Image (cartoon, rainbow, N blue to C red; front, side, top):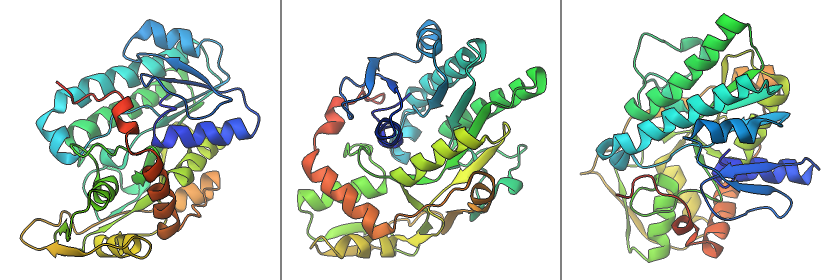
Length: 312
């Protein structure tokens, strides 16, 4: 699911190139790989989910809804309700159809706020740091946990990715995250480019292909119904991010210290994923940013073809 999205398209590419028979289900009416079969499917409809999972050997449930903090805060129902419905329907359809292996893509937002996120530090009695998207993601994790308790099912794997970027990202200027927002404003010609904060905030920016490989490894090896973190393996400051962009794109920039910089540090610990599923993120920040920028220059308007849950 979500095979036209940022992580999903990388999974489709990897699997198709390996000779797999791939079906992608999403609401977006376009294709990203010539060998994949594409279905326009509303995953908030349970019958649809039952039909598309009925003959599948493996299901990668990667579909989600992505938006900036501003838009998810001002329009939480537009994200929370369909995300809950998609997750509940897809996972239950996979259970009823006895799909041999399933992987569910959760999010770092399901964690309680911290500087370094480790699976062993997960506190179920504390709320997720991203209130509405975090709860929606965490509820699907509880659904998988319920299957394990009641039915003894361990064929559902779970991953929690960090801040993911790459080709196919959401470049809608109204609700884009930090990297696509910066790229959009650079492309627009902002001079100087204004960056909120002093640049000291540290984040874990993971390239979408690395995350896609982690998702595939999680399905292959299994996680026993528990979740593992997927990230870049290191943190980078916003200043380092801007400098990395500036290393191959000429633009002037300045930091606006009158604006908030956000939480000082948020980084994933990927030790468990390395040990449990053999996860090895290999893409450097500059390499990933270059790939994303080159894709963006050729696909500036793709976001207009995607379903936007935040449109009234």
